[in-house]
Image (tube, rainbow, N blue to C red):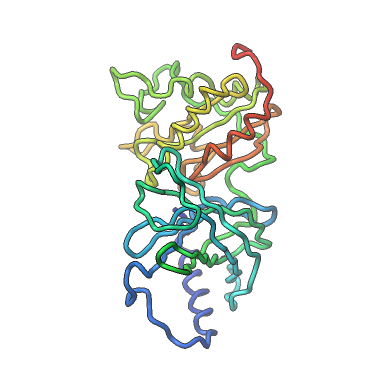
Length: 327
């Protein structure tokens, strides 16, 4: 989930209070007074949003009775709230249509709902994604409007921070030539290679732990790299996303290298693997999972934060030429 620094959180509270003070809208029933099934919550789930070029922004929707709002599409309206220098009335910005992304591995019935519906996590855990360009850094708000089957139109808002530039490697940047741990790394604890790997047991997804990012960049080979900690992931998206990447590796291993980088060298002592820290640790804060697509030229072509799906990755892999796995 999106976490703001302490100073940013305080500023955001001031911005929102100023916006409320400027409003002349009559008071309405507060969410706490509504029936849970009539309450909608929104949470921006993107990790590294920067002003400028269009970027994928993802939002999770939840009802007051603890169900996911899933499937179909939603409408998103963005507003600029203010920056570090001044608070101001909300200024309308771009709008977008959000499409639903189902978390990999979620079991669904034979018929996928065409319209948004409130369901338990086991039936439709996911987020809504839209490509949007936000023209300035500062604090923004997204208002998500959705017509939920059986419940009618609902709206929820979520505030988030937009940076002046990306802090995590982004498309166009050169990939960091890191020597991540592999199954052959000497003196590396099993769990530092994959948090699911226990002594005496077989390494899960061994194909994802056979090479390093540095080796693939030097070889001029495209790569899909997933940074995740399947056992300790707060969002519980890491395991399903890692498994999805492994499934793609079985089918497209002759087109690209596939690499998993475990986050923790020692979770109990809070020691982070060097490769994960180089890519993701900023101001003592690390968020995951992430998936990166590195081109044959060693530059990042695409990246996906928090939720990545087969539907997003597979078309890029299909465009790559087949090469010998020994090359």
